[in-house]
Length: 147
Length: 428
Ligand SMILES: Cc1cc2nc3c(=O)[nH]c(=O)nc-3n(C[C@H](O)[C@H](O)[C@H](O)COP(=O)(O)O)c2cc1C
Ligand code: SF4
Ligand code: FES
Image 1 (tube, chains in turn brown, blue):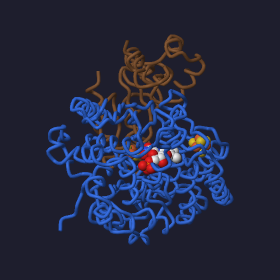
Image 2 (tube, helix red, strand yellow):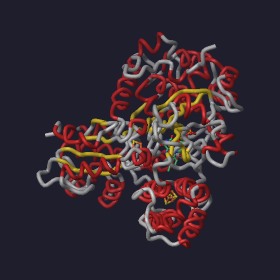
Image 3 (cartoon, chains in turn blue, cyan):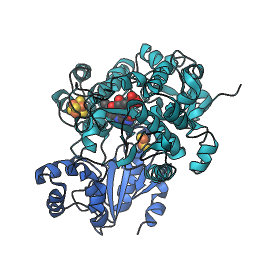
Image 4 (cartoon, chains in turn purple, red):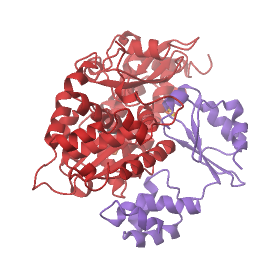
């Protein structure tokens, strides 16, 4: 239903691919091979092509992620404001390397491109929340808010 | 006389953007009424052409001229499309966020006018997912505009119809490149397309399509209302209008400001960004995002307009300045930039994909103290291979700019890494 509605703006069904993938991800957390197969029928495009599309975009997760996803900016303005220290503090707090999910499935830590908050660096997002001017020494307090 | 700031006049930090009633009370949608009821599409394009509005997405292409390439009249292919590029993923850029979050109706109004000028019947705003607040506010503004008859069928009884949709991106920098963006909207991988044909004649699903940046589009209502003479008068240089400049890095007050086009680097950095933070001094800067050439303190009197920054050896780009301070390593900064470009390369052109991998490896070696002098020369020749004309899109030339200029301005820093076999900044 939701996916059918996402097709409205477009002259061809395939164009709703990214919207459709995101809808699946919102419900299931990530996009499995089974979901790709299902969606390919709905979008009337070959499985391989949809798979190719899905894996191109970094915000479409083709592997399971934690309950909360941390997108930590590793681009230049944040780098100038010591984002390396922030990244290592987050990784230390969680006990995982960037790119990984904690054993309890609570967090996935992903380095990402500039979040467009360079004037408030270092910046990161947790789920849909933007955190700016993040103090690496207070990262624990922020993470505590995400069960 | 107080400086005019048409793009940000409705924007108050920390306050919600105007809803449609407040926006209209401040003169909003007057330009739509004026144009749709009283101007031919070609007159709108003409006004934008006369104003000399240069695209604010980075390349500075003349907006009116771009529109004039779109086939018009009875025989023109339909539907035609307008796409507003709200991807803003250039590292160091955060100016479109200000406009999107602060005054979404201004963008909707600009989009209606641009679509009218080229007689597009469908418009997309291509928005990066991370701009969650902007997405909520745009959705609200679009719904309000529909409910007042400013979008949809027969807009304010003019006979012109337009549907406007929000497309939320799946991520990746290359989506911002205009033909990559078109593939993304079509539900494909966002590889750029080979050009020609250009989108104006063959864009979305092969139909005529105009792609413009958020800030470009936000200028349109003001040009329609006030005319080319007024627009040119806003500026301090040969190029008209105001510009949203920004500064990030170790300055006292990082931020974004709407100032006359042609404001000097010095004024932006000293008067608006408050100068350098205590204990830091200026080593260099990228004037307009990650894919522009470094400038140095010797360039502070350069005017921030497309022509002047180019004459100084760089590009205005997005106009958001990234400041390199004396306590950060230039080699480390360039390594960070090139890692970004290497990761975001779509992999279609060998010089881009392979070249950037090699560049990152060499820079990584130098930064870690394992570099050799000949690596520095190799980096310079690799940068040359990324120059315009060797690749399908401008990502590769953009990646070459900070590298080649860093090798020019900070060569002694590269050499110190090689001689000392370590990063002098790390163990200082
Ligand atoms: C790799 C790459 C990324 C780009 N990203 C953006 C972007 O995020 N936003 C944008 O407006 N233009 C971006 N551009 C420029 C667009 O291709 C295009 O020139 C621009 O949207 C046209 O709008 P304008 O004429 O109004 O400036 C990018 C270009 C390249 C090569
Ligand atoms: S220059 Fe790079 S990003 Fe652009 S099309 Fe070629 S490989 Fe892709
Ligand atoms: S560089 Fe980190 S938000 Fe822009």
